[in-house]
Length: 277
Length: 277
Image 1 (cartoon, rainbow over the protein chains, first blue to last red):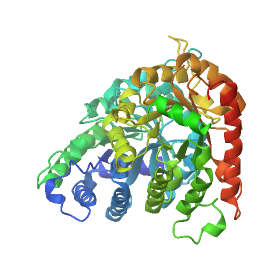
Image 2 (image 1 turned 180 degrees about the horizontal axis):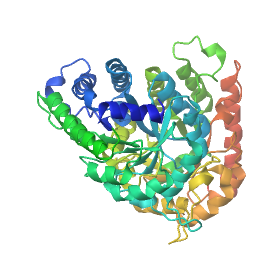
Image 3 (image 1 turned 135 degrees about the vertical axis):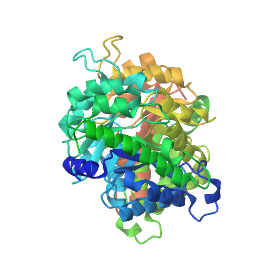
């Protein structure tokens, strides 16, 4: 999928919502626990209830990996199910991988060959040869961490380079623009620092941003859109816990659908205001 | 295992060798490919031939993950086998994980609960709350990336902070020392930059360093020991491809054993010269 195609999907669905499938087995409704594969059953019902409001899903790999072999099976079934429901949905493996070249090549194989994700999140610390192997695939995307939504972002990401006065996250963005075009590279930019998106947009005016942190982590959709949106929308705003764990009773999927619809409606208004529909 | 206990093992075996199990299914000897689980069979024979010369093993998770469910099964069997052969071997999940707190907690569960690794490698980019959950386990270790052995290390790790004049890797080390004691935190320091170990040791005189890059990547054991060793050895030097893929015929394990012994003998001499035996 190119960035132009992604923008088409956004206009069509009037939504730039990405739903994070952080499907913690300890948090899924108890009535699902007798199912053969409770995590998949949970995801399936969530997807059924929400897919008309979303353009992307983002399984958080940690939550599957922690369940061992069964978790990987749940993940594969979830990916297959998303493809079956709507093959134009953009599916992100939120894996935060990154290693020396020959090892990153293996991680790329995991998510782009063994499984058929559209994108994988990658940590930048090890530099170009740790990111490159993910970019060798056609029609696949790297989503590189730049400015994250968590408190620990302050520890290193704002370190200011004495030569260029760039902060680390800005340096990451500049390198990222060199390494990957707008059709293969996005950047993670946390919603909890919405006002910072102005600074990011100076460096990456055209790339898509994946924005986590709306909802449970406290970020605001209005603020994110105000500072981060570009002429092709340029945003995928993620919500995980705020949608999938909005309710943990028998109606969990219905409530998740309502939450997703609520966000989608707000997104439609924003897109309209910006004359992007 | 405490750092003192690890030093005891090093003295006992006269070795500070860590063997990297980067067991690429495409590179293992062809006569093993008819085995039920070729990767495990490969690892088993490598472990049998090398364990007397090593204090640690480091499966590179990417190579297992890329094989899907079968890969995770091979990994678990490999870990179990190492424990069976010698339960005092230190086993590192080379996974380079790291995410927001609730997600890092899941990754920690994978490697410290679902599987019983002694240590996991962690990427520092997302800061304290991405590392903290791995440190909540007793007798388990975080090995945080500081200065890596690959060319891409130059992209960000040497960025110099305009406030403190620390370079990024130095800032990572300083934070790491705050976050984890010498009995729960190590740092990755690439052998390809051996002379830099002097700078690292100014900040982390007492912590163990995991040093990749000797062998295939070009680092020198003598140089690493000269600049990086402390009074408790303080080094785990890793070799992967240089040992496990030294030969790909019927004698691969025997040759791997010889390579490991060669390195161990050199390590014994170094330990002797430094009066550490």
